[in-house]
Amino acid sequence: MSADELVALVCCDLGAIVRGRALLSSALDDGLAEGVSWVPANHALTPFGPIAEPNPFGSTGDLRLLPDVATRVRVEDDGASALDFILCDIVETDGRPWAACPRSFLRDTLALLESELGARVLASFEHEFQLLLDAPPALAFSLEAQRRAAPFATRVMSSLLAAGVEPERFLAEYAPHQFEIPLAAAEGLASADRSVVFREVVRDVARRLDTRATFVPLLDPSQAGNGVHLHISLLDAGGRSLLYDASRACCLSRLGEQFAAGVLRHARALSALTAASPISAARLTPHRWSAGAVCLAERNREALLRIPPLVTLGGGDAERQLRLEYRGADATANPHLALATILLAGLEGIRERLPAPPILDRDPAELDAADAERYGVGALPSSLEQSLEALAADDTARAWLGPLLYEAYISVKRAEIDAASGRELEENCRRYAAIY
Ligand code: GLU
Ligand code: MG
Image (cartoon, rainbow, N blue to C red; front, side, top):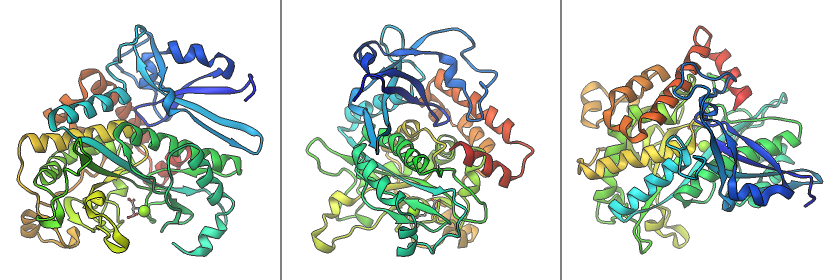
């Protein structure tokens, strides 16, 4: 590595944009110890550019971006400038965590689950994205589509491997030029870090090939959207699954049922943090195989919470596989905030020993009102505005964030709603595709 390369010290902001400052690699040692300067109002920057007004920060205050060197990503490519960055916590100038830092919020949440339940979180974020190409798309899941994606397909996999995020498969997905690359599960904080790293590496590989990868929740409203599905398991100190109980329905333990019930109870408020843009709700409509309704189901891609199949073929270990999949997120959500708030909703369900949610065995859109009631099937908010109202009305969920993070988040989201209002969905999808 030569001395004149740049290493970026970055954080993922409330609009899931990765921002920060870069150092010469020769100055990195100082940067590791004292971080680089940061400004509170940066947390009120909107994805469209301007700072959201009003916001809780104004022009005052100073912070530091403090790098967590374990997250360093360095991906070299054919002598071009390497992608080199380190994820940071946002801290006060004396090193105390800043009250609105999403990464510290997740770390605190994980510590709470550990102290209250003795639980370690294992999670993975499953992303879909699309390449913006003019060529006609090949058929979904076809070998032809994978081969036409060369050399992107192999380069992206090797870059993701180099970045340490453990890509598992490459899928040519259902929408035009849409792809999905599941990652191996990792410990809670690392799983959300991987989600940030994943998007940047994918975008970078596409950029180097003179194309663009977009994680926009919906590129074309007439097509399938790009989801982010969070797969969550809870383990005890000995590594045994706290969600698994072979004697119960779908092998979901009593604790797992309570966790699921908590997520469903707070689902509408959660959507403000997981389906975080003005176009996100349009993806979460029936028959897009995203999440058409607030319910729990096994192997059913219309449910907000899914229990994926336990594959015992080839000696597969069902206990290790059991997880809950939250399908209602997209890449406009900050992954640390999304995971933390889903976990806190689940923890509430456990604290309150909520009854088991029914496990739906059919398409939620086809239920009549009585059956919807019986299966506990509810609707997701149909706009970000409604999601923010649900968050405002959910005292418990608001309290998770604390006043500063809540206020900052609301100012950014209100500014986004204003910037999107009065425009057609198609146009807003295009605008978001240019950003994400
Ligand atoms: N594209 C779907 C979504 O928006 C997900 C399809 C699937 O992989 O099950 O979430
Ligand atoms: Mg998919």
